[in-house]
Length: 267
Image (cartoon, rainbow, N blue to C red; front, side, top):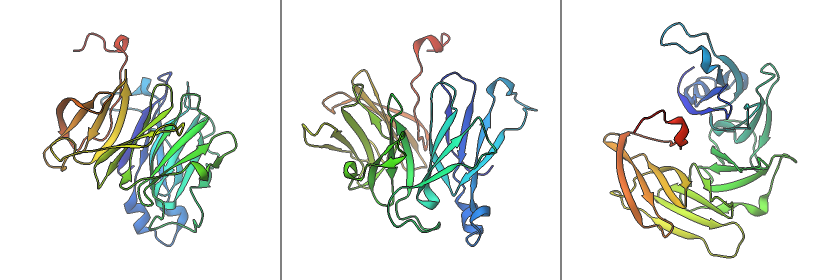
């Protein structure tokens, strides 16, 4: 479908999933909620060919879904950030005909259209008990308990800029939050022992930070750039000092860490 947004592969490699951030569909069907909903595509990668691949399984989910998280190992449950209606969706991928469960991100959700919260990106913690939801309209990060299916309103983190794709530290004591306008990285101590650290970026360092990944104590930040010239990946050490700044393609917005064993000899 139009405008693929986020893409993810299950831990066992048996499912590839992409969301469709189809704002145009929502605009064209402003008076019809069911028609405004977009889909996710669930794909069996073993059948993919350059031509003649079998069709994906399309599941209608919600209005303008973007960020996703898949449960391990098989992506039997898919969590989605439904930007266009201020909700998250919970999809049973093993039962694609079953309507997804939709849960309001906050109080006062009354329909779809101009989002009040604008949930855009998600991150599960290691044991899949907690889902972090980045809201770009309300400029906050919220925490969802996957067992009780409720938000912990007391844990909400208010950000000055719009938050995007976050990551945890290895021990999950800290949360790294990239924000746009202002362009910065927040390091939040979830134990409450330390104050939040803010590392602001110049345009030369990182314009429009979109995602962050922690690896061996270092941080790798994907920077969109100006959407015309190449963006970059900025590497920071534990003290938030620059280790490297690598140009990549135009408008990058995600980064995946590949295990050494999966590289198949590639540099």
